[in-house]
Image (cartoon, rainbow, N blue to C red; front, side, top):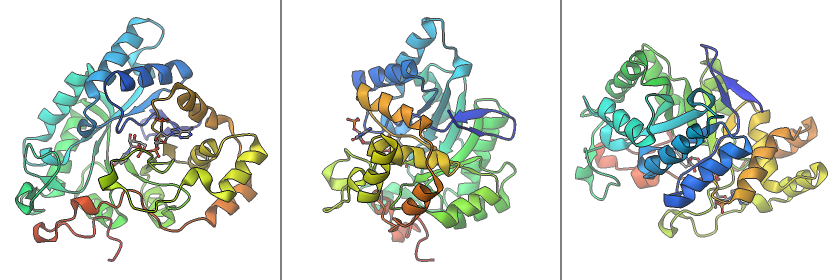
Amino acid sequence: MKTLEFSNGDKMHAIGLGTWKSTGSKVKKAVKDAIHAGYRHIDTAAAYGNEEEIGEALSEIFDEGEIFREDIFITSKLWNDSHAEGQVRPALEESLKKLKLDYLDLFLIHWPVAFRHGVEFPKKPEDYLTPEEAPIIETWKQMEKAKKDGLARHIGVSNFSDIKLKDLIAQATIKPEMNQVELHPLLQQDDLLKYCKSENIHITAYSPLGSGDRSDAMKGKDEPNLLEIKTIKEIARKHNASAGQILISWHAHRGNAAIPKSTSKEHIEENFKAASIELEDSDMKAIAKLDEHYRFITGNFFEEPSKGYEDIYDENS
Ligand code: NDP
């Protein structure tokens, strides 16, 4: 398995298990199936509402006595309602309690948007805190403290543009070590990747398979199906692999991590085996041509210009 290495030598598997929309007994089984299949990297978030079940799965795995806490890389994320002063540590402690862990391997600011405490999903402008009320640098300082206190081995961000990262880095003491963003052949984000590389910020690709089962409210009408792209299918045929495996393997070949979500044992195993695919230069060149700057997760559900949140990915700047 390819790994991403942090400056202190810690390593993270390039293929992890995503868990958004995985809940209850399904996510618990998925995590256990994944670890038994060889996964050592699990991605969750306070907002996914599944940390407790993931915690149960992990404890049961550790109780089996063959895999230990230090073997598994666990990422969780700070929800947007816990950015304000004094709120990061309690939120992190709550995640740790649910996960039954005493540290996270990676803790991320989920989105560059702040809500009032207790707001899960904003419905009106008053649900937001403005960037002046909850400056991202103040949230970041609390993330830095969590790292210094040993509650998170590594800290980073998610859904940050290069503009937002530059801003943060200019004021930060510890640089973000990770940016988790949407990435797949239709959204290749070369400039963001180049910038992150120049700052030694790792990249994790979310929605690598096109984010299958979102609620209708979050879906575009005629969304493309990544698994049906002709070029991807042709490359898959050549490597005797599935289209999903090619989509996953592509990230490792670009030096990034990917966290495909699945609750199906078959898919979980299939996705992990993508690690052994060796894409050729010609495959990478063919995939490079597919970029359409297409987002499945538009982020516009968090845009609220009256509160200072517009153009969340800074695409029109
Ligand atoms: P993915 O792109 O991982 O797609 C998941 C869908 O693909 C599911 O419907 C799944 O179904 C299906 N699937 C999985 N494996 C295969 C396969 N081999 N062949 C065919 N279909 C397959 O979507 P996500 O949006 O969930 O992204 C992955 C993870 O990234 C999330 O779960 C989350 O951890 C993270 N994420 C982070 C975000 C952020 O803001 N930081 C935003 C979005 C995601 P099935 O379960 O039946 O296999």
